[in-house]
Amino acid sequence: MNIRIVDKRALMAGGLVLAALVGSVPAQAQDKVTIGVAMPFQGNGWQKGFLAAAQWAASELKAKGRDVELTVVDAAGDPQTQIQQLNNLTLQGVDFIILEPLSDTAMNGAIDNAVGAGIPVLTTALGSVTNPKAIDLQFDYDELAEKYVTYIAGRTDGKGRALNIRGLAGNAAEQAIQDGYTKALAKYPGIEVVQEVYGDWNQSTAQQRVSTILPTLSEVDIIFSQGVAAFGAAQAFLAAGQDVPLQVYGFDGSDINLLLDLNARTGYESVAINVDPGIGSLAVNVAVAKLSGVDVPMKMTAPIPTLTLDELKASYKGMADSDIAWVKYDYDTTLADVIGKK
Image (tube, rainbow, N blue to C red):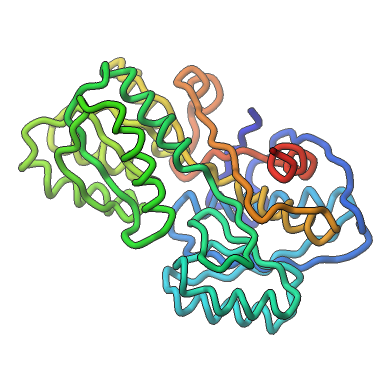
């Protein structure tokens, strides 16, 4: 698996460089294309990894002869701002729009405007929209939940008391992840969710909210979480002088370093499973494929990687807390494994 670590403090400078697969130059390589990237916010590591992956893909395509320019906008978590930004990108005449939607319905009119102006729109990462005109590249959240829950159940013999830390309330992707957990947990009636809080996909928020409810919890064996909540949850337990329950970790350096530290000090074991920020590179490649005349499906699925403890020890020891790991998907890989996947 070709995983990249990106230094979030040096995104625009290109970060750390790892070897990449060399793909063929897309058709119409002489044309310049401008891709609008409508981000929901950039306040967490995952989103910074998404942007770094998109920038990496654009630079790879440029090195192969396709001039790709990204116009990035940030809605700072406000759906109305995102609608305005989408309309502005349409008025600017970009060739393609990549959208991480803050709402599954509020963006529909702006998407209609873009598509009506001949600009394809790809929704990704934060969930789908109800507008059928948008191309959709998403994670299979049932697959994510199945991997996550199966690992936990295998370690606990399918039994235990669990704390569930949800993501950003009202978000379509958050609900899809939660629905996936619910389906997967139905196979393991011995795992009981005893408390639920929202972590807002934010480490500090997760730590604060878990710390608040910890005195009310008599026993917790397992933590289920979304996004970057694993680190915050663990810190809450450690600050209370308690052992960290079994949980799956994310791809942030803080998560990976904490897991490796717990393992070294106490023998604690787990894995990292996450929706991959590298989907940003897939989105750029899909955009260029579409603009090059490739028959792009309206619905596509991105892979969900797993990093084992042995892999983390071998490849990510010493990773800065400010780094994040993500998979690099080049153009040919995207054509074969995402666009052409049946």
